[in-house]
Image (tube, rainbow, N blue to C red; front, side, top):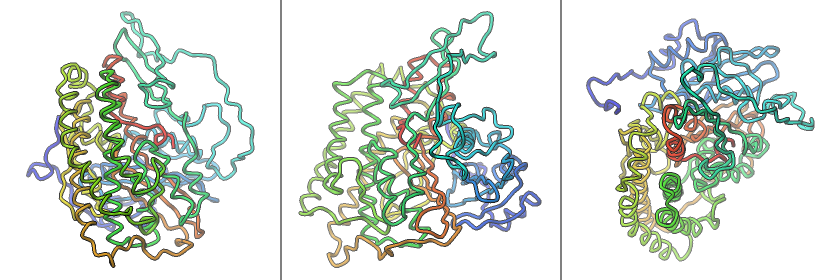
Length: 555
């Protein structure tokens, strides 16, 4: 299945509307306006969520629910639905839904956007807002027996918690049973190589066929948002992003926070630092995709000796360049608000030469991977036409990155909402229309080549940059105190998709609310759509094709 080209005369293009036109479209649904730095905020009643979001989705084209942010205030609870357009993510709207302080109930957005399922469950789990009409409102990160909501104002952090383990109850639902079948419940994980970390898949089988699979997450929840809320903008938050997608996307994570905080504080990054950031980010993308390729081959073919080690070897080469640049192997902590911490390593000529050597050998390596994997008959049988994710389903779940682009969704924030130096360089957004496990791998392999193009152009620019203009940082105040109650959501194109940060300032040098929009969190929601009706090995292939890391799912 493929999407209709955006420039097709038959494509259903919804014209952009001004905030005033959107308010007129929503009419009496709007009860107030809220100031967000990059998106108009419309305040609505908690019983009109579905009507409001349906109107914005169907009549104004806001078909991408990026994230749901929730918070408790002294006089109310509040949910914020951050909406974008897949065709143009610079068109953004925030729908603000206050709920009663004594009885925090709000209508669920799940019937309009399927991705709201997990996002609202997280808001309920951590803050305590109940979502009326939600199909499965229960905790998602914490055990069901947990007492209280950790981000609520009256939460007692010293309260002892006893997370009891209930006796095993067969979770097979009524509609999974019939007289002609013999269903079985199977645990996959949470400690299993194929789950890519501590993920528990509750799987219901009818023979070898999957009837239902449910992702049980939260085993690696580390309170990253809470820690960021206790750190200062200027110095103490930046080390945390490296630890979200801790495998290889450190600089991409750092950029997500930097972009949000820099826009919030009106900091302009020097052009030279932007080029360095862009180069480093694409090195991280190659490292991430090489690991995805290696582990996917291991999941599907059991191929450790050849493909896995080959890909890890190429990943090691780019990791060595990142180590030269940042001084670290994984937890880079290289970005700073306003730029980067230091210039390129000396001697610069050696760094440029090593980078070019890596780029020169990369096409040959990619060709070898095509010979080893994509041309492999067994691999093709396991991945082509399995794990099908149609484009409209991917959008409804908020899937982004290679997962969405493998379903033909032409969405990449580097091009569609430009930042850094991307809009000055020549490169292409890769999409595939197969919508299957095979297509998602092809997208990542081709993106490695596009990243190499970007790095090569950055090296050319940096090599010729006048020495007196090598400004690596803006002049940033020692202490940042954004205006009270300023709100912003900004995102970057991380290796796994849209990585966004929502910040609400409270007039101090620390965020009042810090919310992480993890691409893996939304992408993982699509697993039942890809796996139900398939066979057990196809579940493993589908999960591997998502390229999740649980540190980012759970945060």
